[in-house]
Length: 331
Image (cartoon, rainbow, N blue to C red; front, side, top):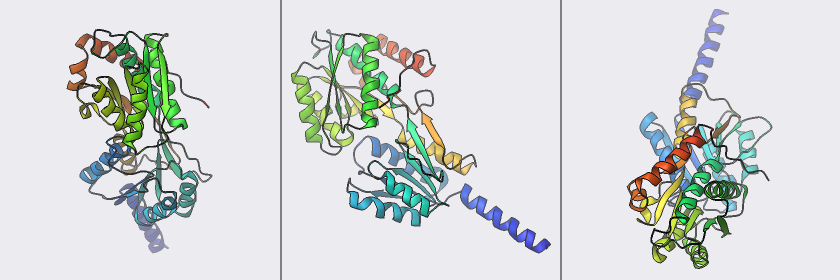
């Protein structure tokens, strides 16, 4: 009897250790790397896990091809102990695979996927707070007629990759931030229907600039790099997204609304390793957690005077401290 009890103890201990210190981590994305934005931010976090924990990692890119969603997830689940997923467009496939592999850890990023067994955890960002700050910056800049390229109109824009709930949440926060500065500011938005076509992003941006818009917030992944190019081409201004894109068009990208996908991956993985992780957890991350917020650097100071930057940073602190409440988008 004692021998059997000891054996059970060893099995349990081994199982706990294997769960607490996973050896293989997969990153499955609906799109592809190289966007210098959202997907690349997550990849940076995955690479950091290699450095910090010595784990093996594998990135599986679906390149927006629906035929690859299910087999990609299946490959990841068969290989990895922990699977981080950006599951736009294949939420049902994620539920199916998670049910087939209940002993694996599935962490879905940027949307909420609920499964009946409570296997899938989710990282959901309060993107409205970061976008609010982008709106604050755009609102301030559009009233700074002393800046080259700024006209007297109170008109700013946004270019979204697609008209979905996440991008609508960005636009909603962006509008709130602009109207916090001046209720008379008008926001014009174009949804281009693509995440990987910079030419479409540039075309949309040029359309908005031709209408008198001075500042455009790009919310379109790789497509949005075309917005930054357009800003530089016509002498206007843009705001980057997800990663720090300030240096991509120096003198024309004022700031970037960071969505720290990589740091979020590191946060969740630390919970896993240190035994705090529970399946089915919802990580709701905003400015207070440092998961969203502005990238302020030397490129920002090339455009804005220090007192303006200080004003922006104080507003950001007030949002993080709850002194300014940003409303969340509801469909």
